[in-house]
Length: 105
Image (cartoon, rainbow, N blue to C red; front, side, top):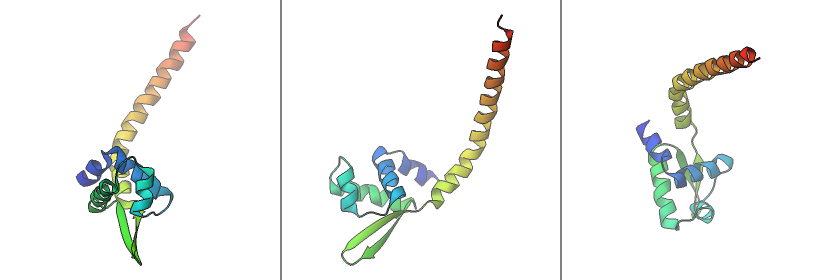
């Protein structure tokens, strides 16, 4: 999971994942959407592949990249406990706000 978190730390890699969430793409297509040169996009794709977030398949001379959601599911499960903690705290805050409104004349 550390590799996934490190991969997600970079805004360009998050942008790549956002694009791949919608549709598979080549490195060239991804480079057209980012303000960095194609070699930089290739480096980001390598990090994403090594973290298990991206798959690549060869079609003739093109490499097509696609999102692998499984590592994100694992991260979501890990975050579940923290999400529950915050939901409990937000519910308590909502209750206190409601009490404050009732107490006002």
